[in-house]
Image (cartoon, rainbow, N blue to C red):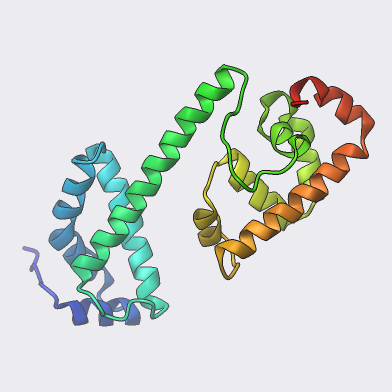
Length: 207
């Protein structure tokens, strides 16, 4: 018969940091917090499977944060996990919403997302349009890994500056925004220098 052990928050943290009694520790986290976290997701447009998937991601992220000493115990584990759970699920809902919106816009042959720092049509319309995707991807790849990652996350994954910041090593959102702008300018210049590509895309670009 399995002995069910309850751990205090400090014991859980100590176990995770030291890699001790991991199986028991993770089971204790699941036993104490899964029901509450899954209830939040299932009452916010999620399914049981969504709840299980997000919980696994939350636990993995929590363990990683503890090992990196980024969980300082300023809140309870319950509160911290709820915050991670909520943030993870809201991001997933945004991602799904953007994917649906993107498909609807593609079906109409347009890509209507607007952003204040969006620059000239040669850059954003070419990136957004399905018919120019293959050609543009070749140019994006030529810009280097950093530009490729930022532009694909922004235009194809529709990620926000905050989400891109979390996925990169930059210091703040403004740095990411500035880098994206420079990458786009380089991409536009490359398009202008390739007449054949420009001819291919001319009927896709706004005047």
